[in-house]
Image 1 (tube, rainbow over the protein chains, first blue to last red):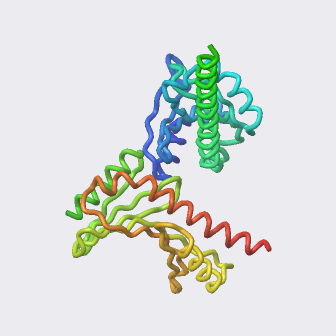
Image 2: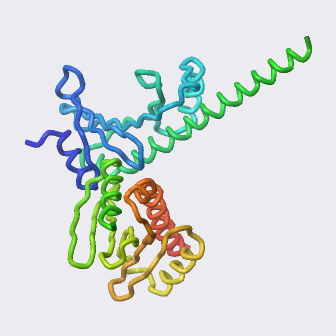
Image 3: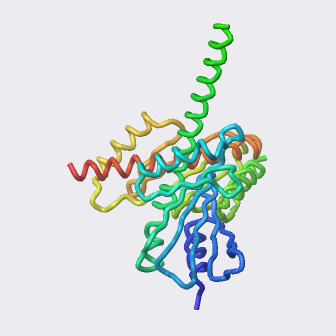
Length: 155
Length: 136
């Protein structure tokens, strides 16, 4: 019988996209199927022992000057509250933000029906999150510069 | 020269991890590929070594009036940058294309992402407008 990861990868290939499959650590049942869509790296996590649960995620890189994990954490929570279905968290190496959707589906076919909608969701919500982080970091740095200049002027 | 442009398109598709096929003939170099399930093509004619066309073709739904589709195509041609919309009456097809001049593979390679975005966006506008007209 075809493995779930191969079935999903075959569907993605039929839709025109090359994929690569990574096995998660020591658990051979869990795999990540990697693809690119509109310039964005996307991955789909599937587990061979659960055909009803899927994760679709996208990593959105942040420029080095905006990688303050502590500062970003609160904003990510705030954004998460305002966006339906999407989860945000810092990437493991802290170089960016992951936007993920965890999806229940009654079958792989049902998941595949919604696949591109889910990809769009993680791509667009992640891009909004990055824009908000950059905007806030820039505003904060501008405010700090202004305060520095003001303090120097008042001495 | 034009074959190098086609190779630039293929390289850009490789960078995007998109699967593609070449089907050249005596007249043209042809590349077909899919993105997010939608079919696209690129054609470069052997007798016109700097002209390249990238596009996607869709079938008009049966319930869409031909005149309505033509009017909408005209509106989009006036409004949208880069893309051309054409309706083929006999086949009941709508064709979205970007036709451009390129002398090297690099010239086209760096714009493929934008080209695909524009093609997708125009097709979406076309069909969304048809649907909203139907609903009203």
